[in-house]
Image 1 (tube, rainbow, N blue to C red):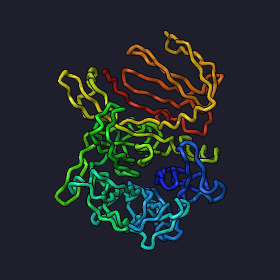
Image 2: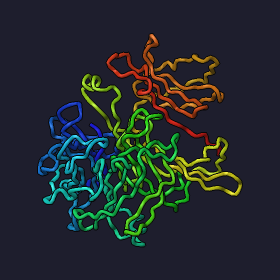
Image 3: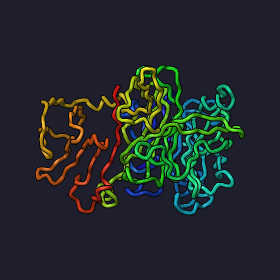
Image 4: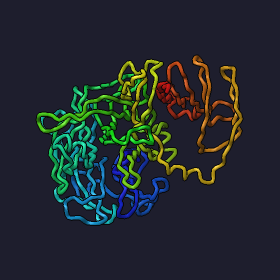
Length: 491
């Protein structure tokens, strides 16, 4: 399994839905279809209709659509009708239908390999019917030497309506991830009326940057050469997170290909940007970047989101790629997993002091100077949804006494063992020292994983170099070190 597709909450059934890319017949990539699971709380899931055989498969390559004979790639869903003929339990899906392979941002693009198709479910998302006029978008904009054209994400976007029309007109907007060879990645913007989601008008590129662009090479990641699985969304800053309950922020999450690997184990990044919407002379809009950060410094990619009206929040899922390569995939009998659901929000800190000169350059923050010399600091926050507390059921609580270490290699065992645990700790270390934890250490000390914080480099490092003794796994040091950069804030 890989990309999460079309996560949503359906008020008609009070179910959360998660569709996802899946290879039904094997552990390695191919024959990409959509699997489907439902949940009442996003924690405990049931396959639809069964995990056995192909029962859980919702969209299959080539079935009812000869433009998707080689794959049903990522897309999005909403609990709405295609036209204004309202039908309860209706779910509309728009996805990328694939006719030719291979598709790669770094090679020649085969014309007609990717089109955008629509399918409708009238039974609450269990089965889908292909639209008679598929594909609803048959080709990318004329004159573009594209690197890719896929992963449609559609939603109503009142803030864009206000920019273009001066008021909320109820339009739907769709982004398609793309790029231009030898130029850079592009996020393409389309618009449709609420009464007809089969008729989309191309407005222009919403996000345009040069190849391998970064706002800040240490903090913002790389935007690569091609976008995938990208989302645009608006967030209101809330008082519970330090906000004013009034200011709305415009964000985009971007899967990026071909990015710089100096600070990241993979050229595929999960990046977010924040910007302002600016109306253009051709009745479109662009998003200028004023802040940018890394959404996940580890193996997670293809972040896909939805608005949860039940709890008034924006939820993201991601695909966790396997680190044990082909040997491990065949040995384990599975490949890939979906993250825990994450809520994204606007985090606001007030009276922040710029002691370490973090704010001398742009990064994953916006700043408002205060009269007393401090700053109001705003960024995109991420946290597990509150429902994950259910996973603590039947858990054991262990409280440990404070420990003091004076030597470089000194450590102390916690004297408990578990495959799953949640830890809260406070570490006091000198500025020129490092400190952290060792997990899953074998009795002979040859197999272990470390999580270390280095205050000098401001890196939080998860080192998996010695996580396994299996020789067939790739143990290249750079491949297995996940670095997350942190900035010290004094408030």
